[in-house]
Length: 118
Image (cartoon, rainbow, N blue to C red; front, top):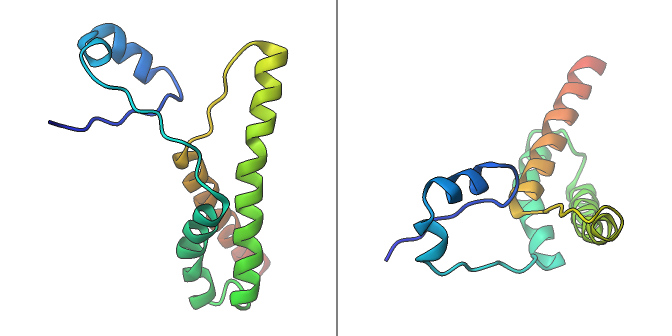
């Protein structure tokens, strides 16, 4: 047995599926369910705790607020995705990697803004 993970975002999965049809036809495809709010909150806190330690966030209370906001933003995208599908008849995927990229973007943007302000 082996495990192969692909994101449905972008063309890579579709192209590889065409080049190697056995990837699709000879395997089991598991679709993962969305992360619950508390899991998103915990992941955000785990990555953002370094900002508190570095002094970029004032305290753990602010860390909790920022993490909860990130979880809310990520979960709210699902409703926008359903609306987009209904209106445009096109899918938009929100993956765990999207959430990790949101955290990374926030940390980079905060660092850039603090360095330009100070």
